[in-house]
Image: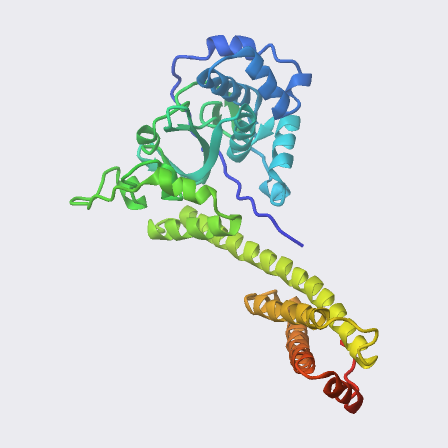
Length: 390
């Protein structure tokens, strides 16, 4: 069984200063969206595309819809959605109109994706009034047409929690933040998502200033992001965990994320190994059928007659397959304790099958090198007594 991990994040119980509402035009139009049009992010995106032109207005419309319709769930039980897919996550958010910051982020990203923009969910921790938050947080970043990344935090712009009660208070303070502004309050666990040539460390975030005489780094984050996005999920988890560790683990939130990414890597690697294990079993069964077909044919004295080329191919095909299977099975590191016995048995069976197929292959090469008279002697002299391979 494959497991998917989702780390959930929570809202800080603080009051944000209210700023002038800059959503008036968008708000008026987005409040006209019908219930039917709000049942999926696809339909919401269609409504936005028909109502607004230009990326900023469309993104603002998506942002406003999320922050104006979702209420922060102060009683959220994170354990109920540990193994939910992104689609289920968003569907439940639309249905209940409640969630924590990961719901706001996933909902916003889903609409933005449907609009055709490049959006990423970022996880990290925060600082406000020089105080480090005691809970992890999730927000978004979008690469816009000018080629730059901007930061969006729909959770912080939707309202605030005080005395375990959510109060909606729509603002635009955290809409389209420059990375240089966002990093004052939002620290990604993975420094890749700081979007800067000079990523700061966790200690620098704590202190609010860079180290003295810090060497210039010139980190090409866009090149690194492009590389990262092309990786498999298992490689993404591994590389992210390496960067988290490199930036120093100085609090429990960072440690929790580092452990989480390591678990994602380990579970993904385990699932990948199991998937490969099952593929090898299927390939092995095919190779054994072909090898047994040849053994039956040899036991019949090579009748009916086939050309030398066909005869050689009959044994070469399963031999090559088995040798390749043996190489592939040697690359599997672990399939879990529950599968260890079957795995070891398969490796032994493959090794024995490779040995037998090579014997048959060598016999055929020797056989086709002989004259017809000598071939007949070889067939009459020894009838293969080997057993069919199971």
